[in-house]
Image (cartoon, rainbow, N blue to C red):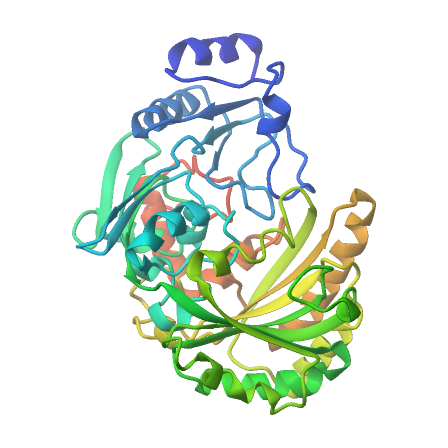
Length: 461
């Protein structure tokens, strides 16, 4: 963007436009993943849908590259594009709860912590992720899974409507009755179809939950994972537990003698009543005595933010993911191998359950195309030191490549890394891809919204 266009943008749009010479440009371009070092030509913070409409129109009419930032939590940094314009939704951080209808309307720049803070006083929540700093927008549009998924489904399954700014600068509300094909595509199809300025979610009774954390030495990974793969899918939907390979952080509730040790373990959430959660976790001793087992009742927002300080914003990240419907013995061996080779204290592998209530919608009810998956896996190299970026990336890619033959072929779109290619996007959407491409043609025929895991518009017949 030349200086003249930047100045025209400043005078044409209502709100601020942040350019490279502005004092707050450096802080504005920082995102969750410090491995991302891109320099947009401008940021346009938007306070409402009208601001977004004006910004989209200006960017389109001037032939500029466009990216969208909601929470800024994208691993591959899709919210920044070199020499382009980022429409920044961070001023749109608000939540309105209707406790009688059990719904929440949420601004497109909000984080999960904002949503949980607003709904918890009413004893309500909706399924989201496990890090409170995650933006609601990217999470929802990719499908969204977390502690409440086995009980109440995906985030996208609880989306009732979305206000969307389209590529032509227009505005629509998408729901089951209005723009139903667009609504179908938004529930798992990523940010391909427009900019969602607000989401309306269904809420469920959730207040204080039973929380558990059980860990074993990493050398026990085979025994524990073989037990977990049988136990969890048969457990009641009130029992959620994601399997993890990680290094014990030097922080409570872990005892000092475990700090810095590589471990395998399960993080638990129980929604079946506080009188029963200890009983629900009793089976954790079946694979052998754990090195540490912690249980406690916890307000749901506290669970949601429990991992925030362990892996804060501003670290080097590289991640990849895959869906799995089983964990065969050969895959267990791969997990054992790479768990023992965690390259840095913050690197990790998580297997998140996506069964239970997430299996109840029909395979074609939403754009999420893996209703038959049992786990969503993520392999993540993490470290604060840029000098270790290569090592964590190699570990992640090697791990993923050895595990991929045991996968279902595609990934949760929010766990896709940078540069995985168009075939991976197709594999992620399976037989939904062609339908999504037709929706893309209808709502974004020129592919203005392409700074994403991109679905290309179908060619007109």
